[in-house]
Length: 125
Image 1 (tube, rainbow, N blue to C red):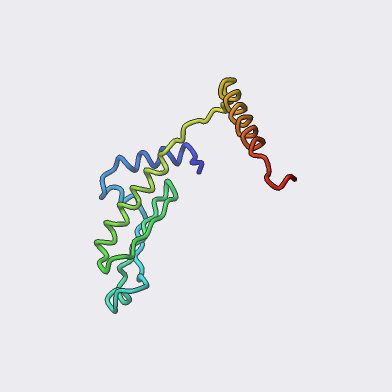
Image 2: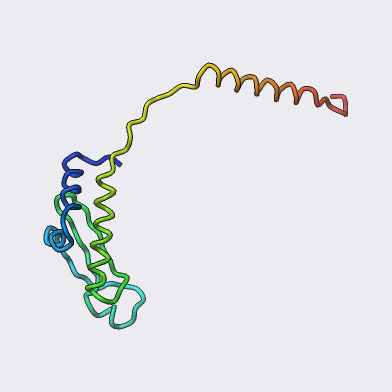
């Protein structure tokens, strides 16, 4: 996953904020969650969706029947997503096997081939 530098910087800035300030920087949307939970869950807008505009990251939480608890879970998920956006993978360099390792590999293959050749066949074919 490649992340643009501006999006990474926005994620770093958002991680430095406390929960209330981060919540103000997000677009909060409440909706009716579906699934198990009875009449209370199916009739109240307890689902929470947070959208952080600078990073275009959106998370939602609908597990609980309480809107406040879902909001807390959504903030935690948003922080986890922001941490993922700040990850910079290490640059990979092509490497080649050393001459010694190539020699050892070929010797091992040769020994295996000789071992198989020595087995012989009992039927004479």
